[in-house]
Image (cartoon, rainbow, N blue to C red; front, side, top):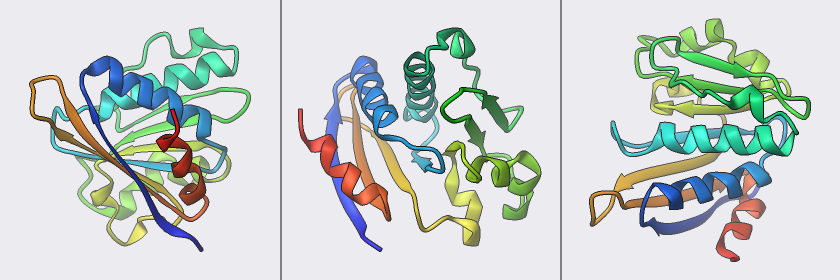
Length: 164
């Protein structure tokens, strides 16, 4: 299994984060797991929202993702799209990794696309086949540093991010 292909960039503002999310959405396939790492306020939810809206537009269902709330309190949000349902998880409040099964992770892994904020809460359940997206605060207020690392099938797709 190919692992560790990476892409690093500086995102100057929210619009740049959204453009990256659109590019990731175009590369995603059913069964993919995308892990969103970063401190509180680093842009994980903003990236997830833009990703979900982009996939909904691609599926011809922009109304499905007209409103994309943060799953901070619900812990999981499901967006039913014809090409692949998108599951957006926020694991911040999980106490044990096994609780993720009650949120629908198994269904997400069985053909959906899983976007997971605070994936470190998964502990030993962290999937080997995944895309890790780490957002950090940048040198200016709205800037973010992003590191994208593809594992398994994502490794080859990460190389496409380096192309304009």
